[in-house]
Length: 483
Ligand code: NAD
Image (cartoon, rainbow, N blue to C red; front, side, top):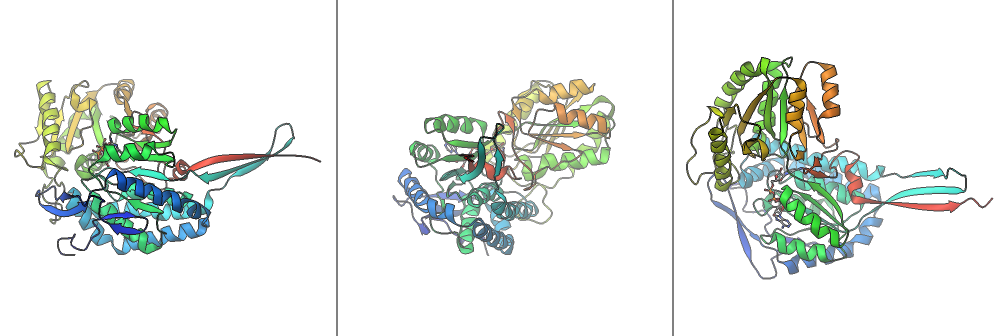
């Protein structure tokens, strides 16, 4: 692969055919580091979206009746193909989204694992039987695929967010229409071409990159054949989709925004806390829904933690993700940089101190790794998802105060806590209001674990044994005992 994109799929994939948009339109995909156009991709119209739904609906019955073992084996082949093409995929992720190549390689490994995990889950869907309490007969509970699914993914993990939805949907016996983010459609198209090679039948997976997200969603969600929408992205768009889903009473999974607290208690292992902080903050240039957003540090360890962390942040190398030794790539675009700059400036105006930081060139997607202390808890930097390489620290005194600060947000996706006290860790597991808690750990995602949030961070779980049930309806039959 020379520039990484010449031979890659860039059209729509509908009913097993690669084809142009009905009106022939395309849109450019850029390298965020340079602004260069790296590919032109077919721009699906609402008519194309309906063609994809036609295909998904027609293929649905046959796929639902395909033996779970066969569905699983196809997903396993796709897992192997992702690994065979890991280098190309990693390069492509870096080219269209910017993260350093080593992180893209990690995303390929992590994202591929969803295909293997759900290949294994396909044959373990199960059910249960029992006798009614009064002995009147048998209750038989089974699970059935919900039907055609609309899967909408964001730009920050273009491979993993796609496989985390496609894997369970296909394993459950559902067909799918995928709409990748217009900023990063190439990785998803590549993965879908591997699914095709793996033997996924025509119509079972369809992909419609588009710049007309709202129009496409509207026609799909109005059509009664669609039965499920699974969305990963911002809370604001999730709220719109939930309203649209109400009309046809669609099953919904919503993986939305986060505002993760990162608690460091006086008794924490300082090295582990600093290592964890670097991972939780700088992975993906800070553009992760699970990224640590608010560093809440107890008074006794605060200064030592800040000093050690500042040294590490200062040493980060910023540059193009394809260069060797780069730790921090560009943000997804210059607009993201302007938004983060405004948050940082406002926090400084509100009394925060910039310990590490710097200027960013106007119009550039690069943002200097930054560390602020004394950030007031009501600063926008603490209230909003930063989605960039900015560490915002504030001090707390008691455990109760730390927990109250951690829970003082409308979000509830991930949280992190560093403490050597097991009893305290147990209390935190009970009191931190988030779907996921890292205890002395800066990374928590795992295909075998249920990923998801509470409150404005969404509903439903991806991964784990829970993930496949997002794509299954429960059916119950009663058989009277006639003896
Ligand atoms: P976004 O909401 O702007 O876009 C996400 C996707 O929705 C894209 O494919 C976009 O094209 C599409 N979209 C936009 N408007 C739409 C509409 N009206 N109808 C249908 N689709 C529409 O989010 P983003 O900026 O791409 O991603 C960043 C956000 O995603 C952050 O808030 C982050 O926390 C969240 N996120 C959450 C998780 C999670 O699992 N909870 C994982 C990754 C990212």
